[in-house]
Image (tube, rainbow, N blue to C red; front, side, top):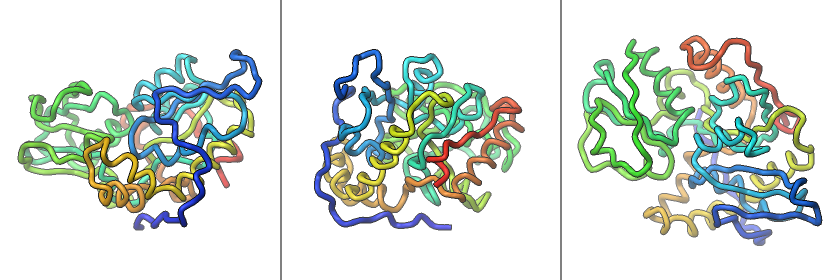
Length: 298
C-alpha cells in the first residue's frame, strides 16, 4: 500500500493558520464555555489546524509537543487534543472524535531511528522527549523483529543526536527531517518499517476527547479544518519551509506524499493492531476500548 497523493486546487484563503502559540475565539460565549483545544506544533499537523479560527463554538487553540498535549488532556487542562495514538490505549476514557489524523502509508520521513550498531545489538536507546507513540512503536519493532528491549534514556528537546551516549537514537517531528551530523550503522524510517512488517498504515496522532464531553459541531469543524488544509498543502509548505530550514519542494513532498490525513478503514485496522501489540508488550493496559465517535468512522 502506498501513500495516496492528497492534492487539490488552491482554495480561497478561508482563514489564516494559527501561527501564535495560542489563539482564542469566543463567539459571544463566556470564557467558562470556551473549549480548550491542543494541537501538535510540528509541520505534520499544520494541515489539520488550517482555518480553525473560522466559525464554530468558542474555543482556545494551543500548540505544543505531543507528549505535553497528552499530559494536558489527561490532567483536564485541555478538552480536546491531537494526541499520540498510544495514549488512546492507556485508559483515560477517550474517544476519537474526527477522521482527521496524522498517519503514514509508507515512509513518514519525520520519525527516524538511528543506530550506531546492528539493530539486534542495540542495548540503549535515547528517546526524543516529545515522543510517546513513536517510542512505543520503536520498542515493538525492536522486540518483535530482533528480540531486544533496550534501556531507555531521554533525549531532551534541545539536545543534539551527537550528544546522546546510546547505541541508538529516536527522533520525531521537524528535527527528524534533517540528517544528523554523524554516520550511523543503520537507519529506520518507522512508517516504512511498520508497513513492510504489517502491510498496514500507521496512525501517529488523532483528535481525542473524553467521551461525550464535546459537541458534534466541533467534531465536524475539526474535519472541515482538515479538508481546508488538504487544499492548502502547497501554501503551507511555502509558508513553513523557511522556518524549518527546509526547501519548499521538500516540505511540499512531505505533506503530499509522506503523510495521510484521513482515518479510513485501513488506518483503523493498523491502529487496532498497534493496540494489540502494545498490550502484549506491556505498553498499554488490557481492556481499554478503542471508541470512535460517529464523525470518526465516516
